[in-house]
Image (tube, rainbow, N blue to C red):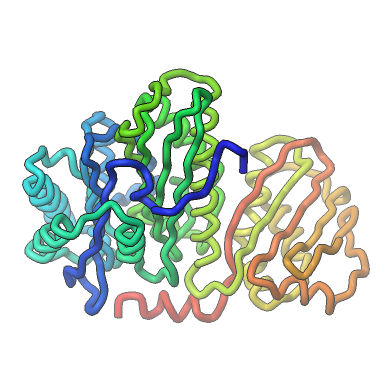
Length: 412
């Protein structure tokens, strides 16, 4: 991390003039919070990336229109438990009612409210419950780290822990801006911008088109490089809200300040992407593949993602089994040309690093040592292609028995 970027506390409430809240509305779950609010005192410009799945949930359609139209946003309302996908016109009506209810509480326009949902596809949301939830959220909103933490917990479904982070960024003139973020996601994750929901707040003054441009670049290097199970969700959403409360000189052109802001957004996004990959449903380990010395960047990305997406490779990581043939096989069908007889392969974890393959053949390594390296909570496979100087990293998780159990019983 660069010296001008620092991790701070506060989550999505770390930037100035942002509030958060959580509420138990009984949307689907009982005995836990299942709605979250992000609220800004000042109107925000927005940037967003959304699912590439042709079957898009109603909230995705609602948010895409607002982001694309450039409407100023004041609030984001999120529910967990029901995805509001495959719900037809009733689903869009729920978005409208949610936005109308929340905007009425702060006397604003309903199109200043983004909505997001995660959970079971095909179920309808009770409008009375979600409107009551909006009232509870607005009454409870606060600008504290506790409120941010509560919101991050409320959007969880099968996640085992909350996912949030915040950083400060010093710009070239000495002014400081802040970025806060939270995500949820542990299953149905194979983004092309997972079910993934992500929300970023910033108090930076920044031009909308530039924010959209760098967001796309950041997502391509972070969330689009993770996979848990190969399924691209109907609800994938990653949005940035910028309210300008930091009062910095506007970032409105290419230059050092834009690069610093982008680096900070990249740091936040990669951190959260890895948190999601490592928290895959039933997962016991974060599985990372770093490909380097590839012919070009696109080849490196294809190769890295092919390895972390392979069910056989994921199962081998779960079993702590050094079956390197599966990795070579996944590289071979990645869809890019290379010389198999030049590939070197290494395992690395907290237990050490060892060379497994040299020039396409096993090195005669110690199997017990390899098992020890593969038994840690985070395992990296390094692949040297000896074909150029490009590199890329992808993140996934192992494939356990519990993944099937969780998804076989998901609706119950």
